[in-house]
Each structure stands twice: as C-alpha cells, then as structure tokens.
Length: 472
Image (cartoon, rainbow, N blue to C red):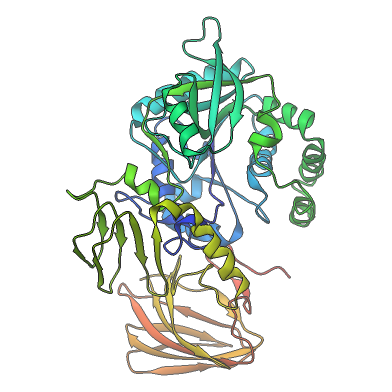
C-alpha cells in the first residue's frame, strides 16, 4: 500500500490563524502535533515512510519538510503542484508518479487536515478497504453522522455487496444540506458524511480518469512522457496550467459504477473551520474553548483564541474570537463558514495578511516585519543554531544587519567574517551574501532593507540547504 497525503490547501476558513503560506495543516490545533504530523503518524505503523507521498505546492513544501524529522523528511516523497487545481489533478499526478513504481499498488488518499479519534479502528478499516480495492473497487469511507452537520457533504449508500463485510454500493453524493435536511439524514441509517478518504489501485483510478476525464488523462500522458527528461519541470508547469480544476468526486466518483462505501464510526472530523474545534477540543463548564492570554467574563459556547496580547471577552454567546499579531477575527459561529469571504476581500487589497503572518516561519528560523514604508523595511530575524540562509542576491535592495544576540557568520561577496552582539555589517545591492549561525545558541538580529522594491520575490538563490536554488 501507498499513502498519498493531500496537503496543498490554503485553509481560508481558519483565518487569521491559517494563512496561504502557513495553512492549518501546519498548525498545532489540538495536541502536540501539527495536523500533517498527526496524519502521518496515524499511518506510520501501517505504511512505510518511503511509501508515503505528500502532494503540496512550492510555498508550503519547505515548511512541511521542516516539520518532519531529518530521517523522516529524507525518506518521504514530495510531489509539488505548480499551482492548485483541486483534488482530481492532485490525485492524478500522484497516480502517474506511482505507476512508474507499482501500477497495481493500492493508493490510500488522505487529507492533511482531518481528525480521527479511533486510530486503531481506522487502520483496521484501511486494511479492509485495501482488500476491496484489490478487487477493482473505488472505495470511499463514510462517517456515521452524530449531529445534523451542514458543513459536510453526504453519501447515500445502496445495497450491501454480497459477502463484503459491510461494504455497500453508492447511490449518490449529496451537497452540503440545509439544517432541516441534515436532521433527516441523521435519522437515515443509509446516509453518511463524505470523509474524502479514498482507497483504490493505481491502475483502477487512472482507467476511470481516462474514461470520465479525457482532458485530464491526456495532460497526464504528456507530463508522464517528460519524466526524467531535461524538460520535466517546464512540461509539468505548462501542462498543469491547462488541466481542469475539479474535485475527484465531481470528475470521476459520481460517474463511476465501481464506487463503494464503507460506513465507519471512528470519530472522524474535517477540521475545516473554527466550528470544527467544538468536536475535537474539550470545553469548559460554560461550553467555551479558551486558548492563550484570555480574560473571559460570562461568555458561553464561544471559542476564544489569543497569543501574547490580552484578549478580554464579556458576555459573548456562540461567537469566535481569534487574535494574532496582525489580525483579529470576530464572528458568529453560525457564519464561521463565511470566513473565507474575508480572505477573498483581503486578496483584493494591497496587503499580504491573507498570505503570511507577521512572523514568518522558515526552516532556518523566522523573521518578523517590525515596520515598513516607502523604500524601507525593518525585520527582526532569528536563525536556529547550526542553520543558515541561502547564498543569495537582491537586484533592488541593500541590507544592513545589526546583531542583538549571538554570533553571525556572514558571507558578503568574496569575504567571510563574523559579527557579534552590537556589531553590524552592510550588504550592497547586487552582491552575493549569506547569513549563518555556526554556534549552538540562537542568533537574533535586526535587518534594515532599503531599495526601490522590497518584496520577498526579489531573491536569486545560488546555494541552499532546503532545495530552493533559483532556475538559471
């Protein structure tokens, strides 16, 4: 078996905690693991690490690698989509990658942002589903509803397959229903939540894609033909841009006669919005979920998330409050699904609050933008012990570094030297440079940028420990 983890989503309904470059699957929303770490851990003793494929995008790839241990990261397989194209293209790209290795292998498709309470039962069901997949079925898992949920899609099951131990045919997929309809489904023993967890053979799904999505199949063939050639990345980017942006549900599963469902009762939840926390995090006596530096007076049934700043709430009921360093969300729980509309409006503006946090986490450490204006930007930078940034150059800005803690090893042009606390150095525009922390203590410094353009995309990388070398 092979596991394919879809981890390219932007998590817009979890803003402001989730951002495009640091979405919810990279956050510790419950427990001591991030969502993607928990997803990987869930199958780690069922599927070898070197048979796990993570499908993501270039913006998130570095962060995902950083969250894994060195040994795990080296053994994992990463598939980077040039752009987001929904689940059909992402799954298809993973399938053609696996076809080179094991065309009859079984793919388990998981999302990186799910919660599963009964992990032992989940593994047993996956093995049962893999047996069905070997017989040519496209298998999906349906979760037995425990409430009239309007944020999930549903699957209506048909008859039991003879001798199949609980596997049923699929009558139809159902869109996210209104509350009254969801209440009826709660009583209907043949209707289940659509978990988006799928199990099938590589050859089976590719045949179904060829049958029902010929445009996607033709694009895949061109991409596959370019594998291991000098034009592989260029072909992938060019062809991928033309592929249909559609879910695997709409594109294939709703049309296939081979689809079956296995009803499950494993405590599954899609951590899709702030409301999902009600089902996975313990509440206080008044039904509140409170995290961080919060003062609560008389609030009920609310979720209040804070970081360093004091967040005081008084007399709230059924409300979400989420405060970060650069943005605050206040919304009724009844409208938590509409948070994505806030992100859509932010994208129309000039800022990047939808894309990154004020403090941006990188594999080598982090940086925080303290202030910026026309022609200048001031950052606080922290570099982990033993870590270093890429050897890079900027066309449109110069940089001045002042060390406030630790010792920095600086490459500037042909010179390599160290600077310590209260010392500084200047990096001219157009000069190759690198910042490194060769000590066993954190390095902190203040960077002042000056220039006509200060965007993060004005970076040409020549050497990098994290695989981000710029194309020639």
